Amino acid sequence: MRISDDITLQDWELTETFTRSQGPGGQNVNKVSSAVELRFEAARSPNLSDAVKARLRRLAGRRWTQDGALILRVEETRSQTRNREIARARLAELILEATKRPKPRIPTRPSLGAKRRRLDAKSHRGQVKSLRASPKND
Image (tube, rainbow, N blue to C red; front, side, top):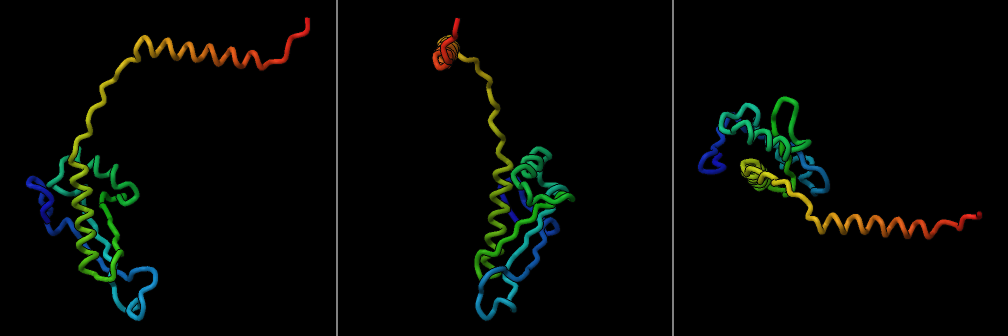
């Protein structure tokens, strides 16, 4: 399966299993296995760098298993072939998203005017609160 010019997944990395979909489906609901569960052995994949694997793991969330596999389950349509296409497209999309490096954050300092405005707002708020207090009896 080709993801991009640099990344091509081999057949042993992908495993598809078919199960019955949930929900209403008419007469064929108990006979046809149209839901697709696509398992991608991401941790063992030689085509992905360690940085891409780490980003993919973070993007996958609960779909990432303990043994380093990514599991996508698709049961959107009643067609098994269409569900397979959707699952493969989602996998390709996830991998492409993981190949993008996040832009490094450049720390900035608040301006002098921003510091003054913050301190003025704090003192003003303190005055408002002090005026709410009941008068002191001397």
